[in-house]
Length: 349
Image (tube, rainbow, N blue to C red; front, side, top):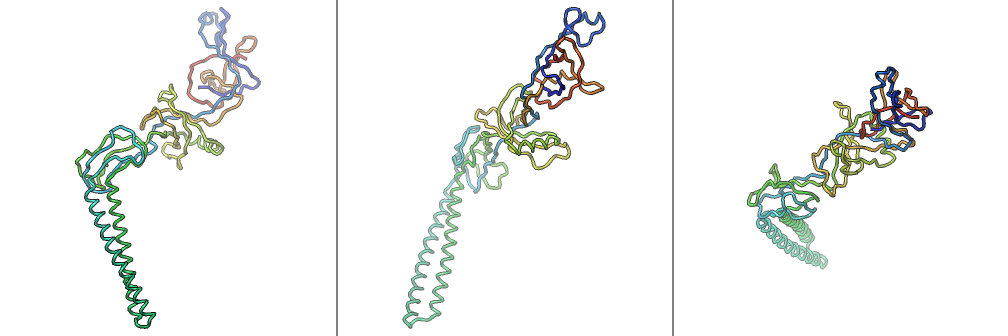
């Protein structure tokens, strides 16, 4: 972990150790006996550089979409087309339910529609004849009104028949169960030959969308103001690391910040989205999320272990140009990321 330091006039700094007996300073060894025991301290040259400011958090992976596929009609499963654990595309046929009952209902509805259309056509002809007779002065207004009412009634019947036919065709379509999303199928929950119902709690199979995929993680509520400020200006990148932080798994971006703070933990939940073509992220996997907030220009950065804490606040040992060690108070800024090295020692001016 690198720590940003404000060291006043100190511009170029490094780590150096030397004892009085062998030309290496121990970090404060006043007695001769102590100086004889040389404790190696690594030396690191530290310069001003651009340093990313990041926030680390533990998170878990979740599917971008999850669908439990259920039957929308009652019927017996005739055939299952998907392979457990295989990839499916949206609209791909998964299951065929026995279509014969629904096909019969669709035919009956179509026949009723044809019959009532014929009745409506005849009613319109009767209306036309009565209107013509009324114009010739040999018909009655009552006959015309009755014919118009009959036409309107039959128009309603035809409209109802059309809706019944459409519903019957819809039930027939529901007998062919298709995937609603791109994703990966899980273990099938029902075998061929079983009768399924829309009310079945378990469904037939669960499909999860793995590409893209999301990561959910939490951060302290104190970080919310600067996260919101950064989100207002640009999209924030998020890196997903293995749980121990040793391996970068994927790069993504912050999708949203939850609309409420958890009062029991004083944390805010965030959601990031990642491309997952190679399937390196898997639902319910624990990962380490690293949110990049900003970049500090010209920051003086040292390993976090260089900074010591004392009664007067944080300090560090500085080796100046004369190779003399002195204690210098420092101001600690952000500590981005987790330490990759365990270096410790004095700072060279």
